[in-house]
Image (cartoon, rainbow, N blue to C red; front, side, top):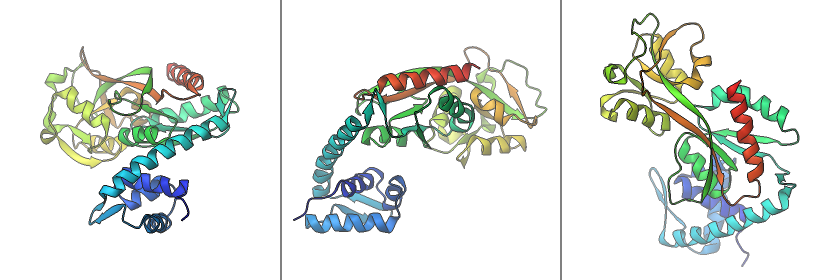
Length: 297
């Protein structure tokens, strides 16, 4: 009987990780029918199902859990072999797979990407935008090389190296013409008007913590971007916290008023993280240095 292919193992691991055939296909950059066909062939080889098909997704069968545990070991080994082959003078001869959270990507990348290509000739980048949880999953399964995040990676995953980049302070955004005096104390903010991103964004959790709020005491519009929230604020529908990194783009046209926060204020530390067991650590430190210089300009 033929052995499972690496591609089949990758597809199965993606389904196990996402709990959904469609999301797994998207993560693997293939069509869902193609992925489903490979999973069906793999299950036929095994003589049993790897996944229970549910109305809202899938879950591993007991056999499937054993299979995925072993498959992940094979995939990790294959990644190490590929990295060894790719390594040349401490740099991969493939694009560096760089993930970044959506509350940073649109504000930093327009300035960062030209700086990376100018200051690091010969290094190609494959940049993707996703939420923190997905980025950390990518570091775990080897589909990402490094990620720019705004939280401390949780324990229990692979050992990660964290390089602090810079502090990103929060400010209060209100409709234009709002007469709040500066600096504004967080305790004085009318939290009943607060608009936040939908669940899953780390910035939402940080804003809740800054204001001492629980999710049921905010006006959530299930917005997936800060730009959408800013449009609500500009139209007089509420107020919000914004990271300072977003101000250059989101305050264009004087549509909203920006108020600095009174000490101690609130903010987040942006960091670059990568697997500790990588031959490209020196390269990633260099990338971190470029990010710091780009932000300082």
